[in-house]
Image (cartoon, rainbow, N blue to C red; front, side, top):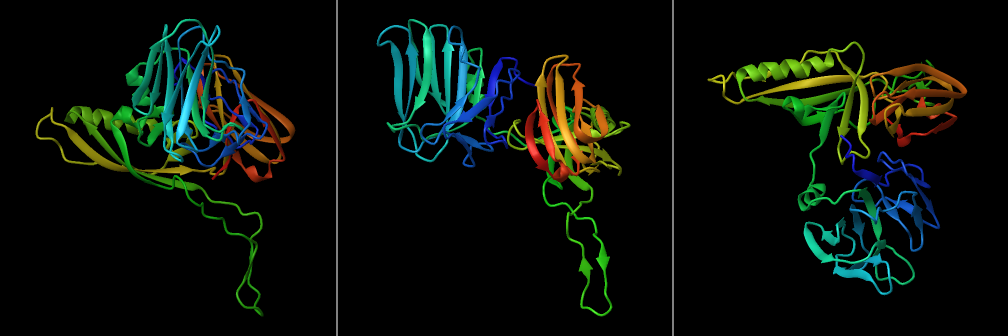
Length: 394
């Protein structure tokens, strides 16, 4: 669930080299200019490199007149990193320089709580001081006079003062999280211990073959490859506090795959900013191996395998973020039929044509991943008001 106090989130993982998508409800996307670019050296995915004097500009500003929390990862290129909080008046500011390790990522968090300003570096609070006046600006600096060469990643801005515990939690390494129609597997006591088919090369369909009797071997049409369906296998463990709870949780989890249409599988492997998403169904049985507990109130554990099929494995993935009644819009030119899965259980099939517009209104506020499946390689023109997570995912 999205934090309602998150007013700017720039993970810098975007495929477009000129736009940094804002993954908060504000949708205040940043624009790169003056030499700024995305770098593959990143804490998560990609990062922002200013290359000395580059800029990433967004309309969202730090709410200096009230409490806020700004946190980010920074990779410095030298051994010192500084910050400066500018206040109104003459020579009224707070400043600190910190020793850092060049080429290593460090987490920084800046928190205003009333008249107190705090700075965290990784898990340590490096600064805490009361101030007078109103903050006017905040900068992070390296020692180069000609410009900044540090990399920046995963910028998050909140309109509240986060607690020290919340600051620590932001830095924790997370498990790979699995969701079925928006519900975490762990809600059902289910944990994935191994997986296959999540990523990797799909099997190609057989192309046209000609076997000339007067030539060696055979001739195979290798142009414009097409691929077979994807098979995903998840090795799972389920636990419950008693025999009766075990049966209840197994039935409840398995019922998630009994729907008439596809179900949405989402895998967050490195945070929520760029997940893997699939429209799948389950054909096979899923037999749970277990040993009944001696007593009804004894912890019970079982194991099982899920085998899921994704019929349309080649796709483009978008993300829509908005309030109730917000609209996602896609304009596409394609001679091949495309299917659009809007992420809320609805879909639009057989989209094709020149500058064809498809729209969808979301009843509830939230964050939705949109899948466009088909021969993505043959899309001639494409535009959308949504965030592009994956240009092509297969």
